[in-house]
Amino acid sequence: MSTITAVPLQPTKRSILVYLWIGILAVVLAAGWLATRGTAEVVALKGSNAQFLAWNKGRPGVVETASGLQYKVLKAGEGALPTKSDIAGVMYVGRLRDGTIFDASQQPTPIPLSGGGAIPGFVEALKLMPKDAKYRVWLKPELAYGEHSPDPAKIPNGSILVFDVDMLGFIPEAVYRQQMMQQQMMQQQMPQGGPPPSR
Image (cartoon, rainbow, N blue to C red; front, side):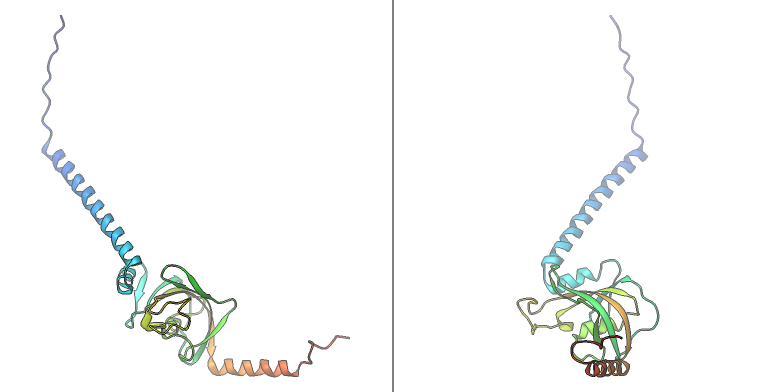
C-alpha cells in the first residue's frame, strides 16, 4: 500500500489577488466604455441633427467653427487663404448624413466667395482652405438650405450636408471676369463650324 503525502497549498500572495481584481475591474470598465461608445455612435447616426453634430465634433480631427461649421482636413494645402473677393475653383461631392450622394462636380467648378449663389456654410469652408487642400465639411441645416431645400426629393428639408471638397485654386473675381470676357470674345470671332482649316 502506497502512502500519499499531502502537500499543503501555499496561500496566494496578497499582491497577486490585488492584481487579479484590478485586471477584472479594468476589463469591466473597458467593456462598459465600448458599450457606451457604440451606443452613442448609433444614437448619433440615427438620432437628431443635434445629437449627430455633438457626436461628430468629438471625433478625431474634426474642428468646429464659431458658426457651427464642422470640418476635417483630409489633405493639407499650402499658401494663402482665399478672400471674399476671390473665385475658387473646386471639385466636390455632396452627401446626406446617410451617405447618399445628392451632387458631385464633373469638372472644376468656379464658386464666388462673395456669397452669391453658394450656400453660406460651403463658402465659409472654402475660405478656410488653401490651394491643393482637401477637406470634409459638415454643414448643419442653418448653414445649408435649412427648411427650404431646392429639391426636397433629393435633399430633405432640415438636412445636414456633408461635402468632400478639393480646393484646386482661386483667383480674384475681377481677373476671373476678365478671363471669361476674353474667352467669349474669342468664341464669337471663330467662324461657325470650328477653327479655319490650316494650309
